[in-house]
Image (cartoon, rainbow, N blue to C red; front, side):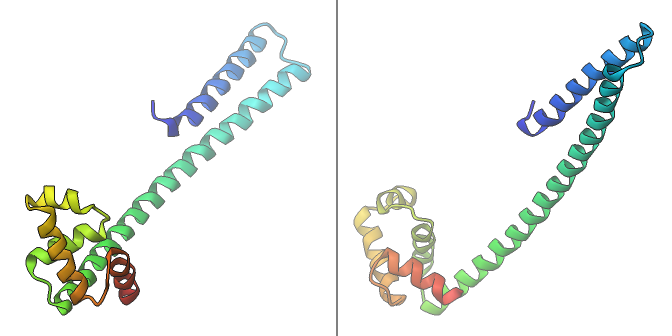
Length: 150
């Protein structure tokens, strides 16, 4: 069972316990007094809580979907802006690929493995990238790049 449903499931089990106790009291003709009314109150209260929790969970799920969709739009727009900037800087297709990997924070060794090239070649590409973007290192490239975009 998913963790998000644990709260609802727990509330439901507690409510069932109190419903069972109220029914037992009714069958034993002891449906009078504080004990019976307190349990009846808890059944009604837990019913309300259960409905409220389900409504809130549905609302949160809808908000998550909307937020996810908005983030996807932002990512797509950001990718377009980044590619436009790469074009303005005159990056070659290989430099664009390496630049994306640099922005993602991937190490030179890992980039070399991913591109099936030597680390030295990656360093040459990044040197060209930094020169074209008027930055001196990865940190300047990423932060300067983001500052230009934002």
